[in-house]
Image 1 (tube, rainbow, N blue to C red):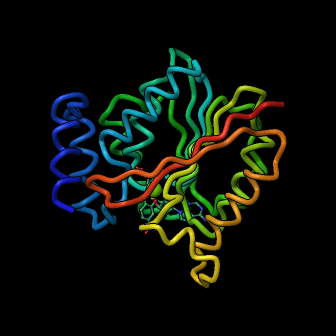
Image 2 (cartoon, rainbow, N blue to C red):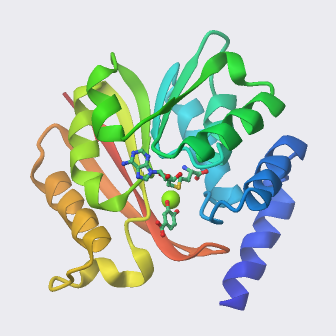
Length: 216
Ligand code: SAH
Ligand code: DHB
Ligand code: MG
């Protein structure tokens, strides 16, 4: 909807001001034919602010694409901090590594290629923040793994948990919707986390994200 886009652009232009490296990352993604599904600038900055708010020193991302959200997250890290980002598609990882290098962040970002369900078990925690943004049908399993790799106080953030409202269709047979609904159920019954979800509108349409804090 035009008003959502206009307001989102107003917010970005006034408060976010994405710089050359972030712009270049999106241009490179576009030129490589990657889908335009990176987080929005305002959402990227929110990830940055959340990572800073919890003083994240180690961050895990599932779903790199072109490295746009990875750049925002890595910029929140203190010297010596680390971001590990998991990506299934070699071409996406190649575009991301170049974008991350252009942003001057290669030393702190490790892009690992493989199916996240295969690469997650080989990781050593704890991570202070995990951003889950890959194939939605595996959301619940990614959350389970992220929980194992967390410490009390860690944040687990999950993108795309509203999907134009499709999330409330209890009869959906769409794998992504089912995956998101399984995630909500897990959040609801998992006593080790406190979670909420926020609907968003803007340049990426109508969607939302969930945030869980690990309690114990
Ligand atoms: N976080 C990025 C966008 C990620 S798009 C940003 O906001 O900038 C989702 C990414 O997840 C795609 O690059 C896709 O290839 C990757 N992906 C999909 N299934 C995956 C899987 N099973 N394991 C790892 N990555 C996967
Ligand atoms: C899709 C995936 C995303 O991570 C996103 O932010 C938007 C769309 C998708 O697979 O369609
Ligand atoms: Mg997403």
